[in-house]
Length: 414
Ligand code: HEM
Image (cartoon, rainbow, N blue to C red; front, top):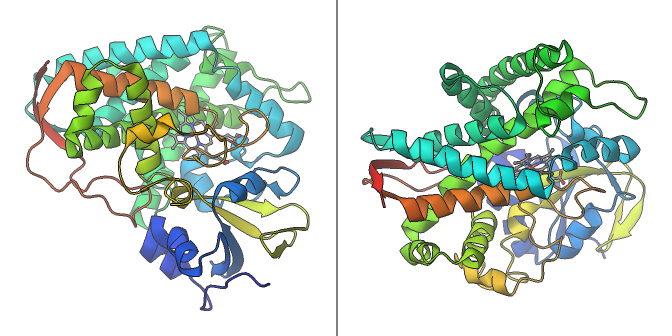
């Protein structure tokens, strides 16, 4: 039995036109978790669902080297970072990231996050109207730098935040947004390289348990220090995604605004509820649309023979919204997580599978902790007004965010 084929010589235009809904919509239309299409002139197989993610994270079947397009490396990822490694080199580099995620360091992170919200809250009370999105990104970068042991002067905050935010904002962009992301990456890499050099020269002495120290002194499998450039890319692989958590915090604030009963429940102080709320924000709101990998060696799945070198896209957004896995998937309902099995393959906003062995996001625990502290803070300690504005977000723009960037005003203490 042949798998469904999307008609047309090339469907890149449809992908750009439909964004997050491109793969899920075809899975629905074809009633199939696998179909073939053509993107950027090449044959591509799209897959989605729990079984598909399990296949996608099977290292014998897929590899990552040479998968991310240059335009994504020039903005979001950087070159020679952990994302594009395979096998022993990947596991060794991944360990560098996972070694930072100890219970003690996650506790530090919660404390730092709480403290930075207090500082921001204090400042915000002196202002009239502002963008919750932009201001939260700044809070996140302060958290990121303090946790990672990176010095950040107040005068640098605006520019550095703008740069890291532009790298994130560029990932699905063509045109000016892409170029802005490239300039931002160049400037940020220069900054991070400088920092690494200073640490290696003994001009800075970050604590041994920080990301700054770890990146500066990590040795590869041959016992060599990372090149200055690679160390800088990996340090930014900590600072940039922590800044990106600002988007999820903003979406959490949007959920509290659109579904006010959730705010009330957050105010009850039930930590189990706030954890479920965080999970539902990560499931419900769109962030990454899909992930890519290339077939390492021939295998068969879902009625299809996968040939070596074929590009395969895993439907991230659609898997988090599929009715086979989630009851009423388009309803925002934190309580659904009471019944969630904890499968590593059905809830995949930050990838699936195993953290140490595969490419699943190294910062998923960091994300959940920061979101929980931040959203509890917003719900329990702050009052603010949400003026009339357009809070709709596009399902085509990648990454997406409310048109108005979520303006708030009259911040007070609750
Ligand atoms: C990988 C999403 C936050 C560090 C990934 C992947 C996704 C993702 C989808 C790719 C998984 C794959 O390729 O299979 C997100 C989202 C975040 C977030 C939506 C929150 C906004 C973080 C944070 C950190 C981080 C806070 C670090 C502190 C990484 C690293 C990788 C990664 C190092 C590469 C892992 C590898 O290739 O083995 N993330 N992430 N991420 N993430 Fe995150």
